Length: 117
Length: 481
Image 1 (cartoon, chains in turn green, purple):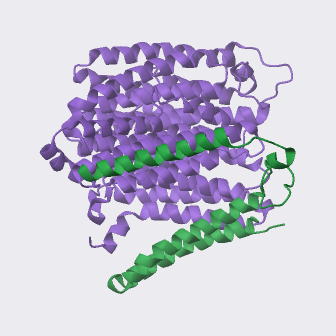
Image 2 (cartoon, rainbow over the protein chains, first blue to last red):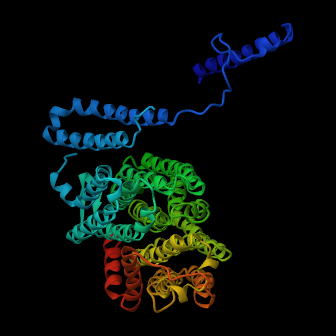
Image 3 (spheres, chains in turn orange, green):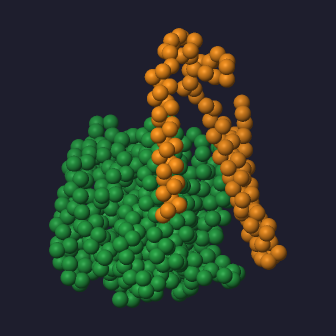
């Protein structure tokens, strides 16, 4: 508990410090707003259009297909490490697994999930 | 853990279902859209094949892969139940699927995938496998519920199901993890000795409460039933039929297995919650069904009430209870899908789900009206048809345990249910048909589905012995107390 006490004090001090700095700055600084100052900051460029825009659904499709194959790689690592031990059985099992994923990719492709325009 | 190749032989029905689901997806891709109608035949043929294959496993009683998967008469019984439901729904869904512009093949692939999830749920011998089966079922159903992309109601139902399904899964998963934390094992059969050692700690009881809530959601027991009417109404009717029957039975299969096999020692603790849940489910489900004017909503609340009756079998905590529960579940499949199949046909022809539009159906289409009437009577539990026998055994099972009041509540509410089932019958038989109402033409495949339901409902009502004996034997081998 002793060690956590130090940590707790540190946490409280950090919070108080942040609040104090913001409050003091708010009280002391001059306030001269202008339209230029109030505009949204976007990498130093002028903002273009509204912030609520529609996304192309293809982003989502891409992400979904990517995610599946990303997770597959995670499964492949432990499989590769233990491959020697399990032998032909693990090989067949992984072939089936990848086969199912490939059918999914084929499906996504055929349904046009990979087409951008 | 040593993987035995022989274990895979016992899982052939599941493997065949998985192959069928992927095969249907591929066929849907390869076959040109004009010929996609043949996919329904392929689905039904495949499912019937798996149904027949399942007969090979009646006398198995094996625990596979070190207890992760169990093939016992209970699993096999539920496989039959899910496959039967899937076959009838696939037959009845054909007309609906033909009206879709695209994605016809996927509908059947998803239907079969959902069936696979249910089979895994019923056979799971450990909590992780159970969860995988559950998620396979739920996620597939989410897609099916929102299948009518262009219809706002269907999309809304899909989104609601995603959110509520995820929430209930999270609750269930938390419960499962607490149980795992206390027992140190995910294998359901290994939990009993470890639980007797640790006893009932408050945190474990909390886990059990979460489990009841999670499974209660899946079987739509009150107060976790709020999702079902909206989603049942919004989903395409064939999907609703499958959701109301098979997914409920699947949730129940897992519910019963976890509570009777893993947690029988804690029965004095969980029985109270389950009894209260059962009683309010039966009362609330039946009472709210009364004012419904939409047939799908009415059937949704009636299915909430039916879940309550089925839970009597768990409350009874005996082999008689489990047997009656199995028996009632399978009869519920025929009666409920039969009623929904008529609703699909009427919806396809008139475009309406309102009960008032069933007016005079007996004059224009006597066969449809007869199927609807007998299925509703079976749901209500009126003697000549099947539902009576199974309800009788459910009530007997709880009376045997001294809970006469619960049986009394059940019987009272059965009488209440007759009222709202007969409102439909009244509209069909005493109402006058619309002037321009024509006899509804029913396609061959839907007719087969309707005949299967009709014959099953009448046959098992008149001569229930073989199926009843079977269910009782399964119940006894599953829970011999």
